[in-house]
Length: 591
Image (cartoon, rainbow, N blue to C red; front, side, top):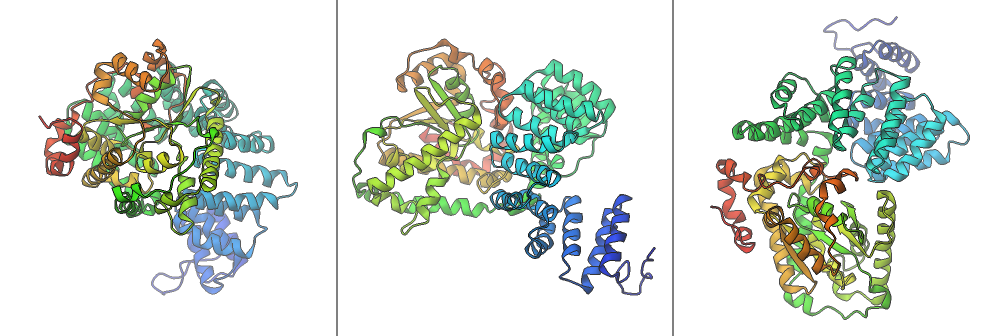
């Protein structure tokens, strides 16, 4: 066994081992659970042979095992470039890319590796499992399930593959099949914490609270320290009214990684419901701080979203719209989608469930289908949005086809038939793209969800979102207010300049007069009344809700979320001048 360098001698911690000895020593340390020391051995050896492929690959893998994906990327990229046929290395690189928010690049890496895997069943199963994780990250649970099924064929006793299948099936709304996959993992490995966690999550998200309680009682005995189990059980207890128990559980637990920031968000929710606004605000602030420090949080570039807004503010003027080159409308342009837009946390998910209760409506939830159209136009000169004014009929047709293909894929992924009279594209920030919608889909109707600006901004700050360049603004209350003001000011400008049929619907009106507002909405959509739209709870429980509002929309409609901001006036008061134009424009007050 190689001895460490003497303390204080200035040499590497394990001496200068040659590559094979270093790899062997690192392997021994890894088997003993001493991952950090194994990394130090490999790093020391790399100082002597900095380009050694196996050492680079080992360094990347060891960092990946410790949850340091961003630090793993550089050595993995260097090694993968030198050894493109090393499948395990390519697999690790794809995993690191996915964890760093580079899912598109990760998919390219793994598909190239799969093409070179030949008939190696073990390697193919490994690569398909990673591809499934990437596709799930990209919002493609149907395609991800197909990959995990292939992985399961090659690794029938791998519990993590069954857990991943369960997650896909849950996201496809196939709850019972999801539970069966998770039970299969637990049958093979009765103490597998991830399976318990995901089973609890499936049941809680499906609002099967009694069954979730039974699973929680077993999980807390089998894996009492699993943070996912503890966090989901605490959320379950809160929903069951056992709030003191939930608080005690959360305050007494330790959590790392993504679980670390979920814990204060859950505590904030509990404190808010227990009328402890100061404690709640402190908890939400801590949750946002911790989330901002994650790999994804550090990778977000919120200024890029502001640059997009600034370009629209500069371009979309009365003169510019008046100068649009006329576009003929072919007959196949008659069946345009309906767009459900609004600032996040304005009630779009509740509207989604109400609309989905109608037999002639299918809703595509939270898929950025217009993004590929913007990117396509931005690749030319001029880019987006300037190019909208000079679109040819041929170009517009191609863009519509691109959208249609994306829509069909989204329908298939969500289990919709695509045969209903009306398809609703629900994506709140499509509000920014109303000029694009009007240009390409001139017969589309737009539903704009509204809510008191103070409640919207506060709710965004209090919500644990999956971060991107837009959602990163919600990590700070002032940033959230400023973003709201700019987005909604653009929305009001669009209403003045564009002629799209638009129906405003205020959340406060919807929760106090649900039937009356639903009737007006269906009249706007030219659809007959169906009482089934009022049973939004049954509709929500029958679907997988991908947004953070899944819990609220599986409850009877309530109004106590309206005016919540008054309990946080101390924090919101400095922001009222920013929000005042929107407060007045939408008929609200600060009384």
